[in-house]
Structures are given as C-alpha cells and as structure tokens.
Length: 160
Ligand code: THU
Image (cartoon, rainbow, N blue to C red):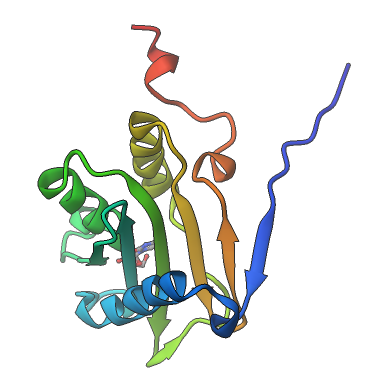
C-alpha cells in the first residue's frame, strides 16, 4: 500500500494587505450580498468575477419557495459570464456572505455544485481561476479551483 498527500496552499490576509484590484473585487462581492434574494435562508451571498478585460461581474444567491430551484451567487455570476462574455477569460472570483446583518467571520467557500461549475470553466479556458474568500477574520486566497476539487470529474473523464 502507498499513501500520498494532496495539499494546496492558502494565503490568509487582511483587506489592507490585498493588492488594490483584489480589494476592489472583494469589495464588489461584499456589495453583491445586497442584491441577494434569500427570504428562506436569510443567508446573503455575493460573488464577484474578474474578467481578463478588467471588468467585474457580480452575482448573488436567488432563492425560491421550491428550494432546489434557487441558485447560488457563484453560479448566478458565472452563468451570466457564459451567456454575455462567452470568450472572456475569468481570472478570479471573490465570495462574501452575510447573515443577521453581519458579514460572516469564517469564509464562505463555494458549494460542491458551484465548484464543479467553476471547474468546467477553468478547464475550458485552460488557465486558473483564483478564489478570494472573505470572512471578517481574514481573506483566504487559493490559486485555482482545481486545487479545491481533488479527483474531479471533467470533460476528459468522459473519454469522448
Ligand atoms: N449559497 C451560495 O449562494 N453560495 C455558496 O457557496 C453557498 C450557499 C446560498 C444558497 C442558499 O441561497 C443559501 O446560500 C443558503 O444555503
């Protein structure tokens, strides 16, 4: 039998330590929480995507009385990019969440379904999408979506 590690690096920093363009992206994710439609969970999530052109696309979670119909903030923003900025490379996504009027102290990472959706785009464009996860205790930065989806399933897995 043999064992191996699948590790990845996470940088943790404060807002003040971020480069200006990353601070702007995290700020946009925080602002995007204001457009959340979350009357069921009261958990407001905001996502902000940085495109290669420099443009920022924002999204927020959109819930529904039929719970599974709702959509996470990340996929709201990601699919908007797919529909409206099809050929643009995504450089980074920032995520923030707030509940009971306060931003969470711990970071909010993308759910499994959003990781899979982001991974598809990362593979398609052939370059990493950085993740900036906001919490009042610190911002956690990961260099690619692939890092947080080990043993991932993607187009090559289908061997088509
Ligand atoms: N949610 C997101 O928007 N993104 C995540 O990464 C985690 C969860 C939303 C879905 C639902 O509207 C609410 O947060 C509670 O799960």
